[in-house]
Image: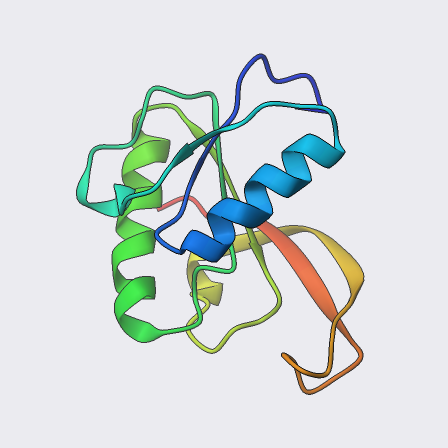
Length: 124
């Protein structure tokens, strides 16, 4: 929303993510709708942009996410993927557009910082 979006909807199946989304939105003075369901079983929504973050940490999820993002793009929706280099990231299907050094907690990651990368979908 800080980049000018009129409305934002977040989707996640994890209740902890719902709480984090609400806290982040409030800290930034915005309201964000949250879908507490698996949207990968649905058609992509009417939207200008889909941001997919850290979705490639396990094979079964990665196998579902990429086709859904491709379907969104086929409907004219721009797609950006953020990922710190997870195991199932489909490098051949993505084009890097930016990278950022990101501090992490060693309770969750094996390093104090990682490089987070932003990708768009490569042409099929």
